[in-house]
Image 1 (cartoon, rainbow, N blue to C red):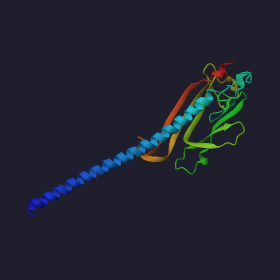
Image 2 (image 1 turned 180 degrees about the vertical axis):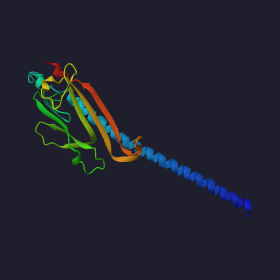
Image 3 (image 1 turned 30 degrees about the vertical axis):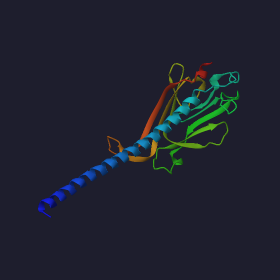
Image 4 (image 1 turned 120 degrees about the vertical axis):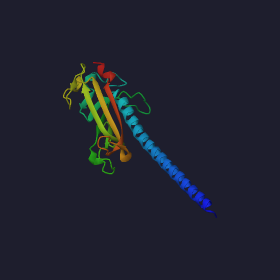
Length: 214
């Protein structure tokens, strides 16, 4: 075998090895991007599920199929704080999808971070939706922020907890959902620390139309 042939073989091996490394890197990058996209999708889906449920329930504050049951809609909100709200509504049933005309108490609140020591993320919490006197059962959706603000008819912000819930006309809902695990692909541009994938949603000045029937 001539020296030229050996050199050709060496050159071919180097080229092949280089191409293999490029292919492996591209494959690794593609797999990482696909994983990041999949996990980001989970965060987005959780946020959509929580926000849609909250919007649906909050717009039904003071609602009842039998409108005479709630003689004073101003009394529909029973308790209002930044992380907890209790109100009257008429929940749907299998037989009565628009409610049965009987008032139901609905409570929303967020639990402490100490409840979720099983996840690496120190910020996530359980969110609770309690119907009437049911046993509270927290649901894990990756919620790290659940904040409520309240405004009167003149759009003045009310201090919390609200002493006179009958003044509430508008609400602002803020939710942030985070992934339970950090990804190296996501980092703080100021500190370069890795961060949790997150999604943010805010409903500004949500109006429960039944509160206006005063």
